[in-house]
Length: 288
Image (cartoon, rainbow, N blue to C red; front, side, top):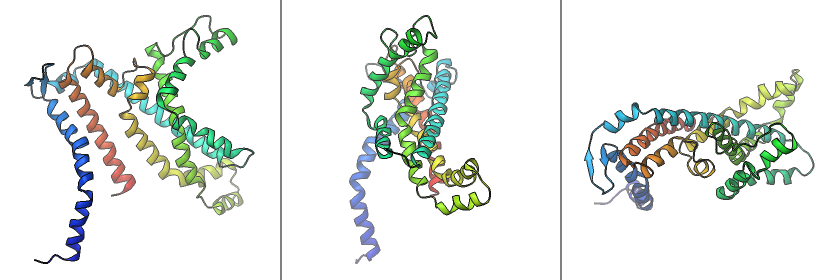
């Protein structure tokens, strides 16, 4: 039976994407489904699995450590997403102006984002080292603000703040690049019209710049929330005592009293939240 052109093109399209679908199924879909499967079992170190139904999820709902990790994750998300977006916006507004050596400054701004994570983490650990670190030298020896040295990374109460600052510094260039690309596409006539209506710099920013940036800012913040919800390497390398949900899951699965079934239930909850954020992004931002 002869196939129509549309049918032949459809079959050809499926042949082209079949390898990609296979890789996605093997590396993404299968691990997700297997992880959901494990969350209903008590997994032994020998590899044996005992079906326990929803017991892992019931334990999760009564685990104070889980709620603590969830709160830490929320604080981390709010601090990093809002902070990197605001800093990126401020830098983009500045870099949109004309001044000497602007191209050089623009290049230097991108360095934190492209620098290897492991190298910059070691740099930050040296900065906050309680013995030889730059921070304690300035605070104690130079400015005399404190009489004793403190390990900000070693103290769980202050380590979260350091991790948030690190993430803002490391990833604000991404916000900057997306925002400035939109800034440069805004019609200059809008600013001239606003100025003729009596708007000053703040008024032009509120009534012209900000409305043009709504879509970019919304997309950027939502994507950063999706990425940072699963952020592991930056946090773990810099301050492993900051237990966000990915770190908490890692400790449950591979350290101490290893409980991979319980860890799987935590990751399923994370996946559920992540799926909701992705759905919101697809429906509200991409409008598919």
